[in-house]
Length: 58
Image (cartoon, rainbow, N blue to C red; front, side, top):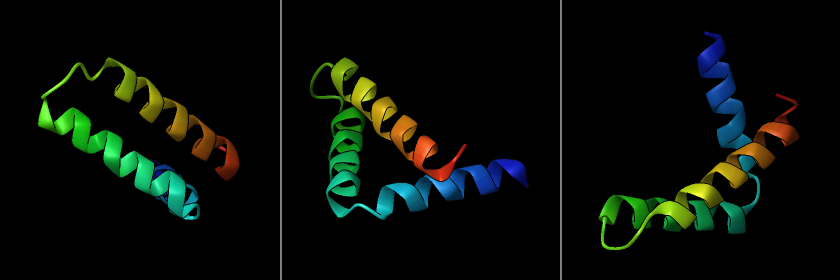
């Protein structure tokens, strides 16, 4: 249950900012496509998630 609440809180914090949510989706597409080195995209995804966790108080 805690894992679900944590995931949901992060999701909501990300979606609360449309630009950030769009950027996250773009980064996820880059990683999923596998057409280029995903290192920078993965790092930025981590940054976005950390910011969302901080906003959610986690």
